[in-house]
Structures are given as C-alpha cells and as structure tokens.
Amino acid sequence: MSMNRVDLNLLVYLDALLRERNVTQAANQLNLSQPAMSNGLRRLRELFDDPLLVRTSDGMTPTERALELEPLVREVLSKIDQAVQPKRDFEPDKAERVFRIMASDYAEATLFPSVLGKLRELGPGLTLDIMTPSDVSFLDVERGKVDLVINRFDSMPQSFHQRPLWNDSFTCVLSPNNPVLEDWTLESYLEANHVWVSKTGMGVGVGVDPSDVQRLGWVDGALNKLGKKRQIRVFTRHYQAAMTLAEQNDLIVTLPTKAAQLKKDNPRVVLREPPLAIPPLELKMAWSPLLQHNPANRWLRGLITETAQELDAA
Image (cartoon, rainbow, N blue to C red; front, side, top):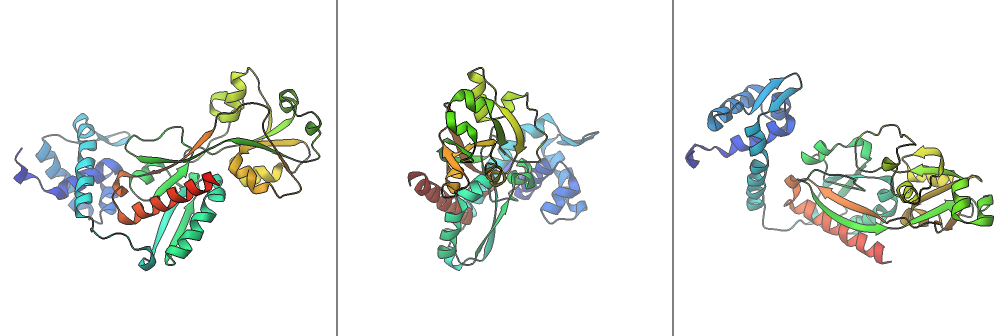
C-alpha cells in the first residue's frame, strides 16, 4: 500500500468506528453526518481490502484484521496528536474549563479537598466535575469523555495510562460504647457485627454475595488466609455512610486509614488498629491514551500527583 493512498482522516474514522462499534455513534463523536461516516467506512474497506466491521446479532463486530489494526491506529493517532499539540504549556491562571474526574468517595474525601484548594489558588477559572464510579464506564474513559479516574482497580484495560498515588493501611472505626473494646482481640473482632464498605473500579455495581470471599476485598481476603470469616451485617459502597454507621454501639467498620482519620476528632467513635495484618490498598490514577499528551491534562495529573505525595508524607 502506497502512503499517498492513505488519508489520515480515514484513520480517525476507523478509530472512532472501532471504539463505538456503531456508524451513527461514530459519526456523532466526530460531528459528521451518517452518510459521510458510511462513505468513510466504504473507503476504509477498499483501503484495507477487508470488511473491518460486520453486522451481527451483537451489532457491528470487528473482523480479525480490524482487531489487528486497532492498537496500531491508536498509536499512530496518539503520536500525531503529540506532534501537533502546541509547544506552550497550559496556563491555569488564564484558563476557563471543566475537568471531569471519576473518583470514589474515599478519594473525594481524602484527596480532593487539598486538590481543590490548589486549583482555587492556581486556576480560579477551573471547575471540577467529580463523578462517582457508577457514572462512568471504561469505554467512557477510553473515548476521553472523562479526564481521568481515581480509585482502586482490580483490573484495567492495557491501553490506559496509570500512576499510583499512594498506598494506605486499614483502621477500625467503632463506637466507644461498643463492648468489643473490653477485649480487643481477633476472636472478639470475629464475634462482632461488621459493616463492609468498598467500591473498586468503575461501572454500575451489582449485589454482593457474602459467600464470595474473593470478591469481598482486602479485609475478608486477609481473614480468609487465616481460615476466618467475619459477620457482615451491612454492605455499602459509601465510606461516609459506613463511618456514620460506626457510631452505633454494635458495629465495626474496617476501612482505609486516610478515610478513618477524618473521624479522629469525632467523640462518637474511636479508632483502633485491626487485630490482624491486612495488606495495604493502592490508590491509582488512570487516563485515556487520547489525553496522554494534552497540556491541560498533563498539568492536572501533575498537580494531583504532587498533592497526593504531600498528603502521603504528612
């Protein structure tokens, strides 16, 4: 294939088609008419001598050739994007824009107050739109509809860029009137009632199966290695709700230490070190390869990384 036959716009069309798996949605993403996108798909099929996308019962399904091309096309477009980005740095003090960030309420409560303080000082025209994990899918991130995501992730698409922000230990939060404090041991911990709290990754959650220890997370995984199991009476995906429930006299909440520390001055709860070793959790920041070289996003990622390092060292 001669390079003079390749229209770079066609690669943009192909990238959108492979992301959306739908001609109409791909056209909308690129602000094109559906006939224009259909014509682009026809030209792509001629260029690569392959149907690329085939209509099946599951919608438009990529061919084997299309799946081979997908990472190559994105790499080419990423390098072109890097080459044409303006040389000047992002100027936050002059910018007017919204940054859309998906974050768990754990990250929102522990990290973002400091991030927002810096934004107010450095970029008074900048606005944060903080979305919950249930608001966002991996596909939204891949398409660049969200600037970045911050959470704990069990898995993540290989194409995403990612950066660890900190590791956090675990702390127990409970009422000072909870009788378990009279004998704070693993045995009494297991006999007590517990609140489970977690929201890993992103997307709409499903009900928890209390018997599926592998999916219950750090605390229950650590107990399982000891051949033990705790009595979970409440399942929640919200750290703030869990810490409020800890004020009841018969419940224990075991959660990341940076979140627990937010309640250290609350007289209705006390903080205790768990009576077992729990591996630390890792908070990560991830973003689309489409935004890797964007000056505004690079600036924001640097600000968040710097803030997280400062909080972790405090």
